[in-house]
Length: 98
Image (cartoon, rainbow, N blue to C red):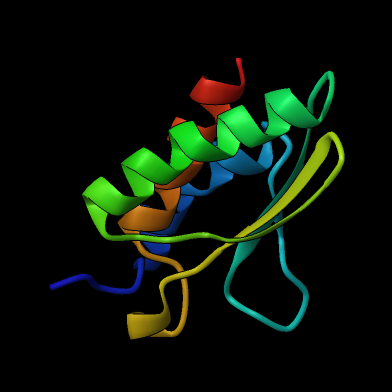
């Protein structure tokens, strides 16, 4: 079962993401980041690649796409906040974005 991150785990897993362009969502225990790509095709391709991992891990992002920009918010609804799955998916998104 997925658990909400403890303070120690949050420091270990989330703080590095905050240094890499992610930020906390105001009023909510969630992280967010905007990804920008060369064009719509690159943005959509990235979303499909991320989607494969999200489906494999059964952890799906909240996201929207406008042309070459994808805005992402990650939180684990089952725990009403951040879990290790959010950190894992955020790292995968960053890696796939290059």
